[in-house]
Length: 404
Image 1: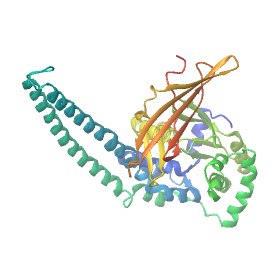
Image 2 (image 1 turned 60 degrees about the vertical axis):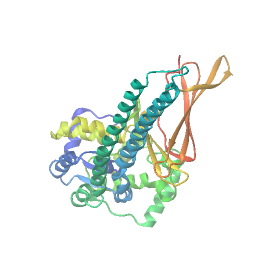
Image 3 (image 1 turned 90 degrees about the vertical axis):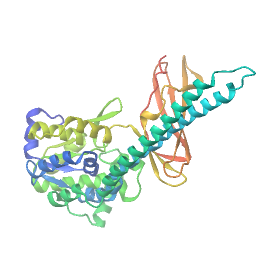
Image 4 (image 1 turned 135 degrees about the horizontal axis):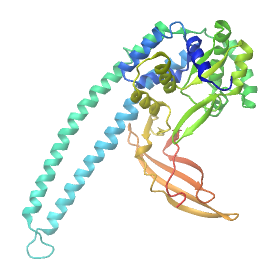
């Protein structure tokens, strides 16, 4: 079953065990509470006794839960305060300083330049009134943000999602250390030959966490054989060691599970297997079970968990992670820094320098976006260099200069 037709899909939705990865569980925090309640209703009615998580997923969820709960503060509200309000204040102060400079330059009657001081004084009053209005506006918005942040923080101790997981999900057994060691032995062979899942984690993780996805897969195989029902796996950590990927603009979509996984679980347990990302799971639940999760909230969730729009930099000074939305970078201001001949074509290298401060300690990062054009009109590859910080998560980027 390397493709999923509509009849097969409908059958699976009414028979399958739904298995959630930690990335999908954590993704529910990006939805408003009223939408999460609709999902809990889906769990208790349509999917009752059919929602399950491997024990390793529970471990990863609990390890990352508090950090994800607080992400709206670090990713959204801190940049709002730092990048928007600070820059507005700087602009207002700059205007007032320029007007004061104009007043000092033109106030003498006995030499040029000389202007009527009354009009300048009137405008100085206008700008000062605007500054006062902005200060009042900033205070009101800051109070509103503080209330929102308090509400977000309170979720750590009054967590509706955690309660649902504990009360409504079946949880797989915990593997012993010896079992995990056996999986790591198999994992070395699988990863050497890029046999899914999990081999991409070898690039970024250490210790037994390198084999976390493989441990989850082994636990899925076990429940598949025990329950003898199809498995639908919900996962937001979309990587090529789990599935074939379609990419549109900055968003990744699952095309289908890796064929090796479909065959392995069928050979092992004689059952069918499919993967959805979390937004697709919610769209499908609206279709198959007539849930009423709003499309706009699913779209916002998709942007939050699937689009590669956030650049993450770990500060070398204080060790805190900083989140920068790609929209703040001026990708129309790349400059060509070198041109080299390669055969009959030219290789053009473009750089963009951006400067951002750590939200915690004001350490300034130098972020260098680099693009290579080869052949003419084609963006061959790109990379990001960071000074005074460590790049944790990259973003895709391009420039309209390519092809001009």
